[in-house]
Length: 515
Image (tube, rainbow, N blue to C red; front, side):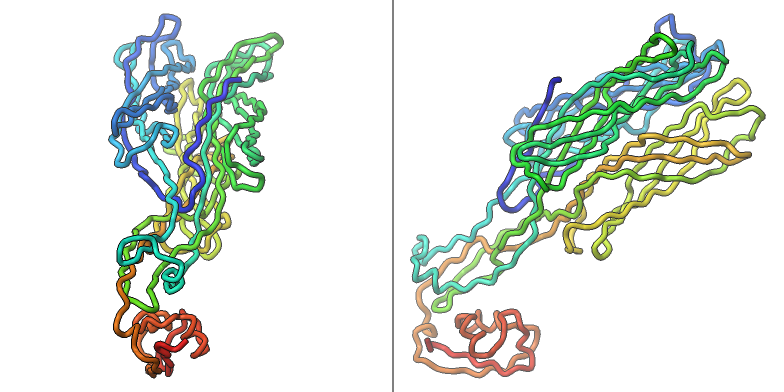
């Protein structure tokens, strides 16, 4: 089985975004249907999947493309339900705001939106879809504070000992993303003489785990078909074919948080013996592992015996909130827009789920969104479509207690199964979803990047003395130590306080020039 693998940059200290942008392009075509397809009388539904295949960099421009696979369901002139698959290529470009070493550093996620199908002639249609592509890249920034003397040389050990610093631990995240391809075969057992009308599929992830330098993904390739039975009815047919993929990913370790998601590239169904429908499914898989951690950065610094100048670096640091996959059921009902008729039945249903909002409350992340469900109903020799909208809500534990900063969300959701029933003017539906979620929080930090020592000051060379300060305002002991250039450890010892304690209303003893 062929494998395709790439990794985003791995390991250093502070993870931040090089860029995270969205670009739109169009996949469109006109298609002259072969003679063995009946002429179109009425379009019932049109769906499309965007399959990103290629990417390369030319200068600072990313060139990318892929395939948009359409499936058109229509009623022919003979009154039969017909499914027509057709694929066309799309290509686009995007100027990158930051330089990258190669396409392995760039993640691309594409989705087909605003899908349209028009009938131009009985056997000619036009297909069009907007392709929304998210293009993102991360970088790792090693952090260290540079210490220089007045001659702009690295400080000596004695000078280093005179530098006092206020450090702070910040949460960070590291990880990688990898992809793989696969193919499985299986069977759908139906009544003998059943004819396949349409076929499609999704990937259902059931287990993801990390081992040393590998990510193991288990799941099911789910085939969804409509068949025409010997007794003259249309009926849904399903098959779930298990798979297991072991994907190489350098740096992964057991216990790392991980998720996976996938898409079906192609489904083929052929008639076998005894009502068996032979099924072959090709799929693409994406997997991601990540590891939370923390590093110490210097928030502030000064030299006890001399003046100093400091420089800061502004960084948008990423901390991990969530990396998980899960199954979720959504159920509900909606009123029909058409009048119920006798002997109606649902031939098939489909569902598109989206996450529209993410909130962090205490130790939990709350995802909310919606499920748009279509029910295709055979009524008086026609197939009509009814839509209902159901709310989606999912909660999971947050990996970081941070509550400030921009939330960055990657959410991939597929409907692995949906079924329902008709009761009067109401459509009842139940959808099974597979969620793959990766959420980070982007926090702005301003650590010191450089401290430069100047010559000894007069105050630093003065005779030993003790000053008394009556604290006020929002100052803490650290502010006092900076102002008077007295080692903060000495102030802590003399006053029985910590460097971050408030001095408001307190009498502070300041020993200057006293060892």
